[in-house]
Image 1 (tube, helix red, strand yellow):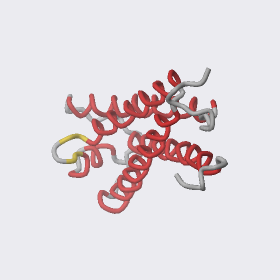
Image 2: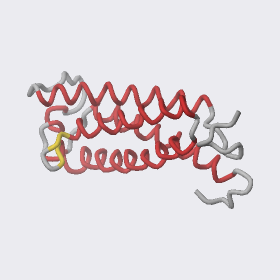
Image 3: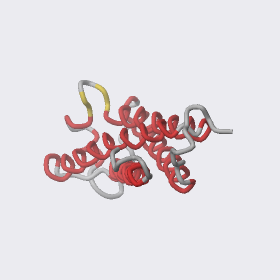
Image 4: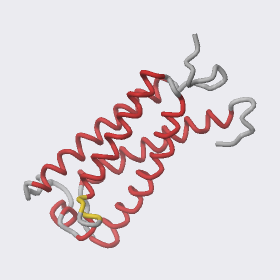
Length: 158
């Protein structure tokens, strides 16, 4: 029986991509949660390498008064919930939202790596972990969109 939200012509997300996306989003959620808690308790996480304090107390650590870590927590929670919803419904559109949403995380990651290196002159390993995880989500999402564009009858469009 075909799910009414998912035409039989629509490809499904490969298991490895779905599982990888869930693992990356969960890891990102945990990292961002830790940094969010540290922010609201006015604590700086222990940092053996780099300059966590310089990065996490810089003007770039907040956007419009909202900690970037909290924005990351919401981002990873949304990705995780969308992946879980896809795994239940198999509605490919949910994973396409994940793929498009991951672009935002990737662009943000590029910006925050730039800010750490060029503007702050310090590196936060916790932040780099998040940036690597969101980059991984971007590549997994891009693969799903590539598979969609290669589907017969799709005309190559995304």
